[in-house]
Length: 256
Image 1 (cartoon, helix red, strand yellow):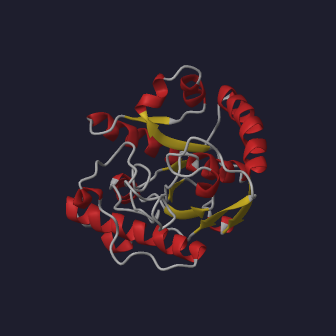
Image 2 (cartoon, one colour):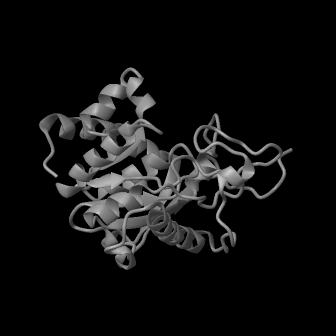
């Protein structure tokens, strides 16, 4: 994607701040980078802590791929941050409105020009008590099936130890390692020619989530739950903060 001078300068300034901080906070281990397509693609990672965008953005920027996110529309109202987001061509999403469809169209245009769009299929930080990927939303699947854009699953693990979900401070010592694993583009050929109804999009989304979960299971060396966490089944909202009372997120143990 052709970058404007303002975008290149803003990215360089942000990277000059973020990369040293990320390198200071944790070690990094990136695997599967050769699987990133040469052209445009959708990056679909898991989402377990607020600093996830910095982790994935850092990795992509170091591969000379400018990271662009579908970001909450409310972030574009924050002074200073608003200018950074706009100058780097991040894409605002107004949830549960027609604006979400417009945002996906803009994202498609970015990808068509060779850019990389990061979409978190879960839509928010996972509600799963042990930080496994939960039920996904269908935006990434819809964009991929409508346009033939490859979806590249990604999993990362370790950053949550530096900044746990909904935490108020960083835990730098002892030094942690952030692992990122890039998978092969998801094979969605089975859905070619099918109507893009809810059943098709849900099934395709499950295939994407299975790929992400499989990568994360490899990083963690653990078996994921047999059934993916569904917030609705646990009387939880789809967006916003949530901490399960009595548990320490990701620990599998009761909080003191």
